[in-house]
Amino acid sequence: MKVTDFDYYLPEELIAQHPNEKRDEAKLMILNRQTQKISHKIFKDIIDYLEPGDCLVINNTKVIPARLYGTKEGTNANIEILLLKKIKNDTWEAIVKPGKKLRTGAKVSFGNGLLKAQIKDILENGNRIIEFYYKGIFNEILDKIGIMPLPPYIKEKLKEQNRYQTVYAKNEGSAAAPTAGLHFTEELLEKIKEKGVEIANVTLHVGIGTFRPVKVENIEEHDMHSEHFYIKKEDADKINKAKKTGKRVIACGTTSCRVLESVANQNGEVKEIEADTNIFIYPGYKFKCIDGLITNFHLPKSTLIMLVSALAGREYVLNAYQEAVKEKYLFFSFGDAMLII
Image 1: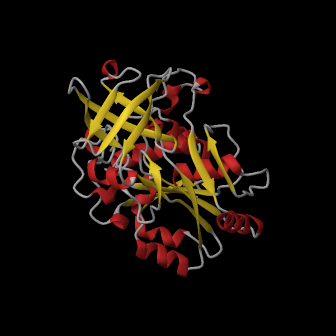
Image 2: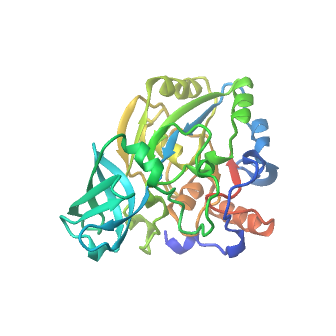
Image 3: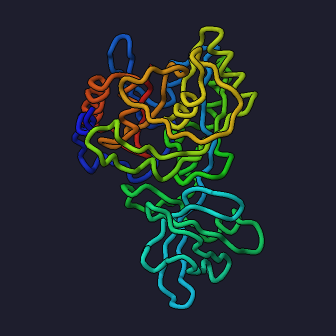
């Protein structure tokens, strides 16, 4: 399949620049795979499409303020670092700018010396391995001097940092938010539980690679980025109960979907596990675990629109995107939502 098979026209003014005033009052498009119909709702109406015994799977990762601005020791050159992935202890993989100023051994200071770093290695893709030095607790220092790493298509400044977090964000480590979950409020989740829907957690730390464009013409040749995830036993049990009793597993977000499909056996059952995944889901893929998906509207020619097309069918999805443009839905991270059932 060609990457151009997943292109669509999107007016720039439909790229959401800030979160919806009320999380659960964003628009919600319903795609019914059986009837091939498209319905228009408000996000809080999603409860009407969930049934007792269903299992809603959410990704409880927490975004860290991963963008750091500092100066190179010795020259005072301005440096920008974006943390991508923790390797071990205080060693991280990161993107640096400008790269030519940060060779192996270079030292950088952030926040008037609150945090210091040294370049330990340069990877083939240009990313750096960085070791940090500090007194105190690393995440507390990040909270003081780091900035939330919004996607490149969001040009406006975020007024409230927590609006780029889900209300259930818990485990720190993401460089980007699992944005389908931004629409949930604590009250809506409580109502969903009261209806008899099980809520299971997975954790996948979203990398900035999620925004990386597909640069090859044939999508099968794309080198998918890897992300770290884990599932606990109590959550695996909830998911497996739904599968065994003939109920549905609804993934909130492509990240939750990728975790479940990476782990599931042929019966759709999952297990407690911690691992990395570089699963690339595109049309032709046979889903083993999920029966439905809550997701946002994704970039043209991205791996995410390919995943959605694998679940609902490419033509159906592209028609839905055309209708979303016509109906003035908002797109991408802070945009409106879609439920595929």
